[in-house]
Length: 132
Image 1 (cartoon, rainbow, N blue to C red):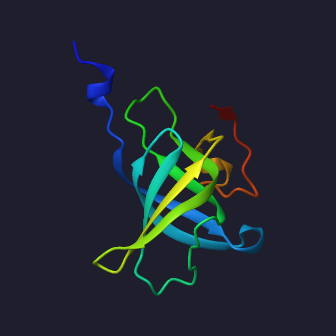
Image 2: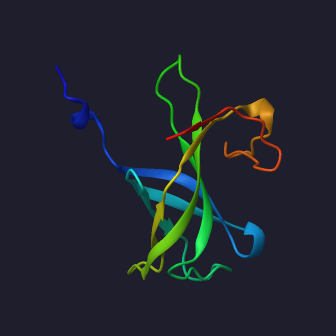
């Protein structure tokens, strides 16, 4: 029998969207590389990005979660998070550590206003919600 902890890995490589700036109008693509119970580590593209993240800044993060069962529907995680650390990696990308408190898991549905990459369009989304 396999232990639940043996099957779980926090190391991932999932596309995400970061909404930042005044009223979260600026959208930046990133990759989530590690997910914890109250934190996410992100990698952003090289330094030419229009957004310069600052420690203490509040962002909104949407992360598409994969599904491996035919009985379960795909979900995405939507959180308001605070940037805890920003560092530059040797390849020019930025690494962000963000922390959050109340994640919201939403069902992903193609017919209910999702973008091409599967993440919800928040202004039009009409999804069921769950809170942790």
